[in-house]
Image 1 (cartoon, rainbow, N blue to C red):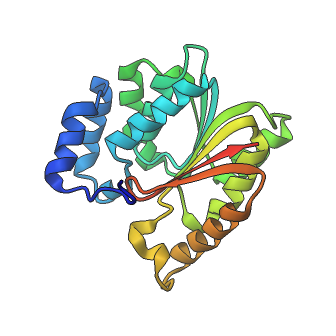
Image 2: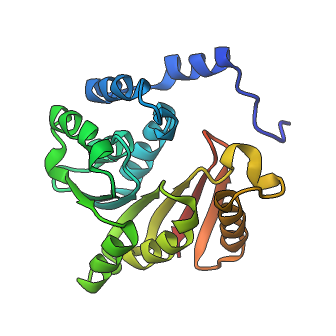
Image 3: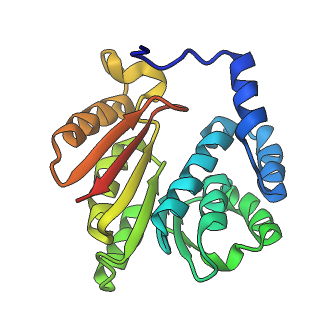
Length: 219
């Protein structure tokens, strides 16, 4: 009986992609366009995008939130999984990064599903709450500044319906969460991971995929 996650070698990772990954041409093109970016490591992996898309479809999600867009691969993955009337509120502060995304959203035919809001994410989330949208969302993905995660989590928890799902990225932070924190981002994630473990408002699962993906289902 296996009691821990299999070590993923480069050969095995290539096997996973070769035997599972199904990408829209726009997704593959966007990954290629981001590959040479100086901050390309901020982009989620393709198998993580596919995993989130499957979660969106399994939930029958219609309204989604993303905190942290970068060049738009995760937003594209979620938008492709939403039904035609679906809506994704995508929060970011960088016009430079998100401008890379827009042509690929158009190419995939999902640009009309993505409501990109360029402002501090906490302000955008608060504006949704102020507009009476608490409890109207099905799915949220958080992948932005780590010191802001706790605030984003709390706001998204209010915006989600019971049974809605929050996906938090980078919750293992390349293994650094299991060590003494040497930077504010790691310390913030350590504190949040402890908080989530004790938060009875959600059902919880931390998965050791990519850089750590935590699923929190609102009860």
